[in-house]
Every structure is written in structure tokens, then in C-alpha cells.
Length: 142
Ligand SMILES: [Zn+2]
Image 1 (cartoon, helix red, strand yellow):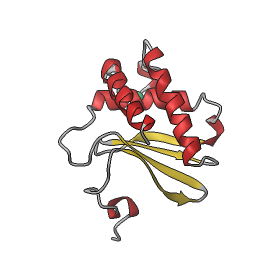
Image 2 (cartoon, helix red, strand yellow):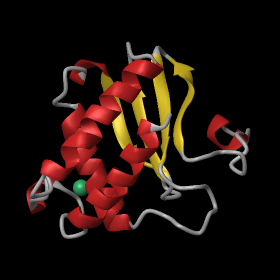
Image 3 (tube, helix red, strand yellow):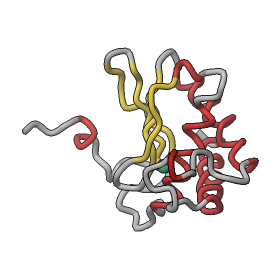
């Protein structure tokens, strides 16, 4: 089989931050890289799961909710993918900064009831908040 585009980028050169992966069918894929690839420090599964619930909820309730196609974690546990339409890099950075700033306000994980989630016991709000605060700091610098 052919190597797919996401395996074709050199992960040794991929830094933490926000990267545009390209546009397909009018949809832009953004790489929210929380951790250095193969750096030995990875997102904890429970924290990653909670970040997915939080950020998906926040962006889908934002002024850009109609421009959001998908938000979800990378299997390698070093970050997330955000798929958007009608948003350029500046727009995505603003959306993400505004979104990550709301995370500390949450006192519970949205969608964490058994009937709402496929692994409702695996959440960690405090670790998710810590990871999101770190990523927000990174975003402030891009
Ligand atoms: Zn879930």
C-alpha cells in the first residue's frame, strides 16, 4: 500500500505547536501538537479523552461552530487533529486561544455520563486542565 500523507512528514522535525496539514475536499486539517514526537512524554489517555470532550464541546458551541468538521486525538498521544472549513491560520489560532481559555471554568467533563460516552469512567479533568494550560502558553507564542 502507499504511504499516506500523515506518515510522510518527518516527525523528527515536527515541533510542538499548531501546524496546517493541508486542504482536502475544502476541509483544512490542523495538527495541534501538544508533545514532541517520540520525546518520551505523551498525553495520558484519560487526560486526552477529557480534552477531546472539552475542546469538541467548546468549539462546537463557539461563533465558528458551523466551521468545525471534527476534533479528536492522535493515536500516538502527542496531540489532536482539528478539521475546519472557512478558517485561515489566524482564525484558527484565535478560536483555539479563546477555546483553551475556557477550559479552567469547567468543574465537570461534558458528556461524561455512561449513555453519552464509550469509556465514561476514563476521564481526568485536572490533568486535562494542566495540559490545556501548557498548550495555551504555546499558542500565545505562535
Ligand atoms: Zn468519551
